[in-house]
Length: 156
Image 1 (cartoon, rainbow, N blue to C red):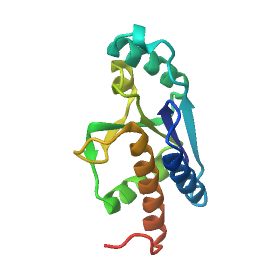
Image 2: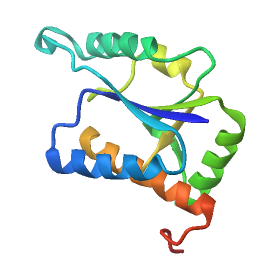
Image 3: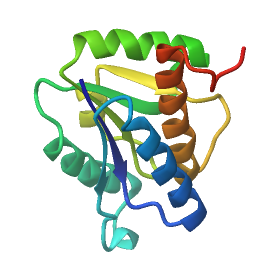
């Protein structure tokens, strides 16, 4: 199963970017994994939040294939413990051809993205910056991979 993480705008904090790159290289030892970055929109000062979400949604939809299993990282999504997430990921690996996770822009997702999504996940009830969520999520994917393989990274 191929796994992809779609991000709206690049990671600007160099420390977070370095951490993300580290975990992505680790994940690639376990499964085909790639990050796709949707370029930041221009002239957002002239757009409402809804207009910005709609435009980002159009760009995201261009990156998604009809057969993809699409999972949004969203504050209203389902929360998992790490072991539960690993079980969930393993089931998806057995069922999906391509699993696509999406972290949206600062205002969330357009209605078209919510309609296209198959599921929604939440990392926490707390709010994190979109930049930080990227690092936290790729670490959780790596952690899930090590749990699936029975490796000693995760401790219960």
